[in-house]
Structures are given as C-alpha cells and as structure tokens.
Amino acid sequence: MSSNLFSLDQLKEIIKANEDLHDKPPPLFVIIHTLKGVMYPQFLPDLMSEFLHQFTLVELFRLKATEKTSLALKMNEALGEEEGYLTDETKAIFNAVIEDQQGMRDLYMKVLTKCIFIVSIHYSIKLPRPMKFLHVCTGSPATLDRLL
Image (cartoon, rainbow, N blue to C red; front, top):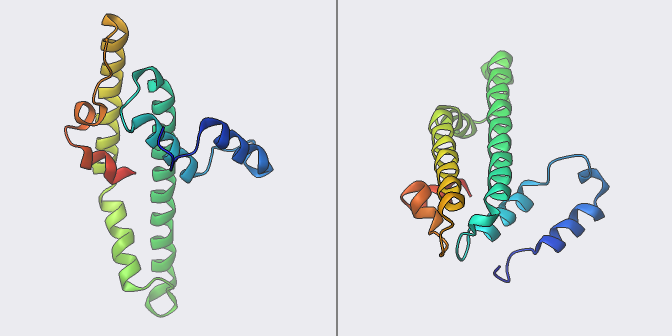
C-alpha cells in the first residue's frame, strides 16, 4: 500500500477513536482510502470481497446523496421563486446529479458484474499473476476514477 493511504490498523484506530462511528458505516473518506488501497498500485484479487463491500457502500452514499438532492430541489420549488434558497447554479448542479443517476447506477452494476466474473475466474483457475483490475472491470481507468 502506498504511503499516502491509511493502513487497515490506522483505519480501525480512526473508527475506535470516534464513538459515533461504531454503529455506522465508515465515513466516505475512509471508504475511498480503503478502495484505493485495494486497487493501487496493483489490484489484489484476494481482497475482492472487501472491495465489493466498500464499493457498495460508495453506491449507498451516492443513492442517499441523490435522494437528498431531489428533496432539496422539491423543497426549493415548494417555497417558490422568491423564498427559495437554492441559487440557479446550485439548481443546475443538483439537476445534473439527478439526470446522471441512471448512468451512475449502470456504471456501478457494470463494475459489480465484472468483479463477480473476475472472482469466478480467479478462484476457478487460480490465476498465478494479479489482474489489471481497472482495465478488466471498466475498460478504462478514467471511468472508475470518476467515481473516486
């Protein structure tokens, strides 16, 4: 793992030190560090289950953020033009988040499906060398980096 990422022990200490985190999913920054630690510099197939768990948590955060974005737009609309609290720029950003929802879900499902495929190959034939995860899962490192 590279030096700019937290080790698993450091992540456990962060969660232990903050009692609010004991019964909740880890904060998004911890999840992102964990994902990067599994993916870079080379993907580790033996950590696929941890990767899938953390990647699913990112998707749950995305779904919750999209839900809150939609609610904020509805509340702003209900308040009317003069009493609304969102600027035109913020409304445009929120609308883009909502419009991109299906595309992001499709990307999540594509990565998830390919990861399951990789696991089945890895454990059925026990590949002697690690796979280049990003290219296998998405065809392009930039696609997954967009999520992270």
